[in-house]
Image (cartoon, rainbow over all chains, first blue to last red; front, side, top):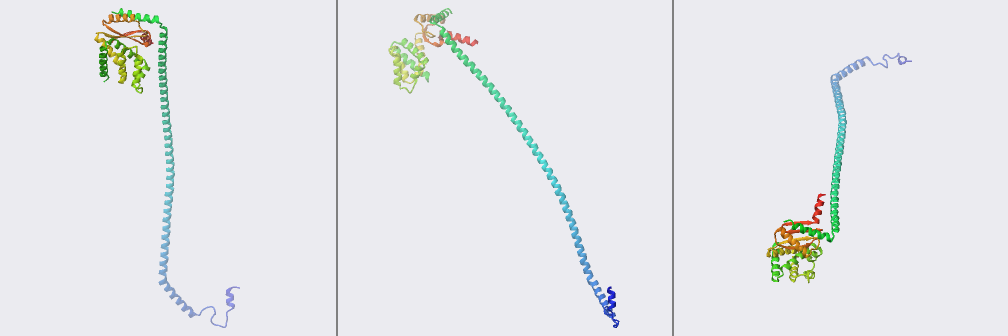
Length: 180
Length: 175
């Protein structure tokens, strides 16, 4: 059983006006009142509502535009950051490369300098050894000559007996006497 | 300064020796004392040591020469020690010998021999050198062991070297 059958079953045939539907006059007045109300609302409320909707629409559009701009800015910033990160990585690599190059240069220079100093020290030591060898040789030769001279003098002195000494004196006298 | 001192000492010594008529003896003894002073390190130290009292050093001179040398020689040597000029003894003695020789028109001939010479050898050497140099000589003999053998004679600027030492030096120089 549907609603309409219920309504029809409840209808009282003794009454001329249906309990559910309004009277004709009420409908007319009600309709006129409704028209007046809606007209008034249309005349005075609609522009305000329309304006409010347009304002809201403009505000939303503005917010959408601002969001888009913000997004573009954010994307630009992100791009810049990504680019900066790339630059930082590149700079880091460059600095590391420079540092490696400088370290290698310093190491090479240090090795060269040490090698030169070692060579110089070796040369100086060699020269000093040669000089010392020469000096010691000279001193040794001089000492040998001195000892030899002393030994020779002593040997000759020991060999010269008194008779020989007197012969040397006589020889001197003869030589001088015969000179003029 | 020492040149003037030497001249002053020589003049004084010569005058004293002349006054005592002992020039020849004194100059000869001073010459031999000077050679001993030059060659004897101990004697040189004893006479030059300023820490030893002068009287004691003069006593050494008197002890060394007393009874062996002329009294004037002893006094003149003591004078040098007493005045603190004993280091001038060799130069003073040489100058005194030269002065005494020049008074007699003699040239000093210094003879260095490895051994002592007897009077006959001295006379022969003086004659030979006089003949060779044409000068009258006042011979001064010094016994010098460094000569080793033979004689080195010096007359003025002329040196006649016939010593074994010089011959050895010549041989060594060839090597």
